[in-house]
Length: 139
Image (cartoon, rainbow, N blue to C red):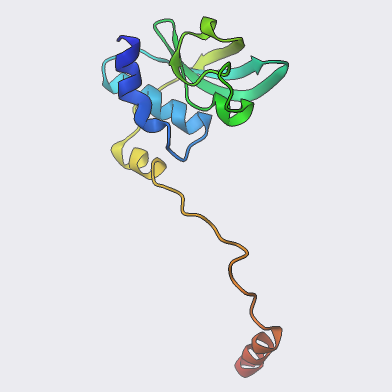
């Protein structure tokens, strides 16, 4: 499959609320469903003296699929993103292939659900005297 077609197939995953493991598993699943033979990889990613380990990505026909390298290495142009030739970037991927499988539609839909923002400090804590009164009434 040409690089452009791979990008078109998988780019919807970029904004998903997933880290490298979930995103790579979904990318491999989509590729399997499209009749491709992706390699789901786990290992490390090195860039500019930094190593990200563990890290997961997909390899297919000499291309790399990694939408989460910049999550850990920063939004720099020399950090790869999307579908690319690894030799075009100053990075080193090292790892081994692990089994890839099709993710069911239900699991996939759940994985892609947006995560609502959590506003921990928006609520005013309850008055402790009110809580004591509630406890006393139950006694």
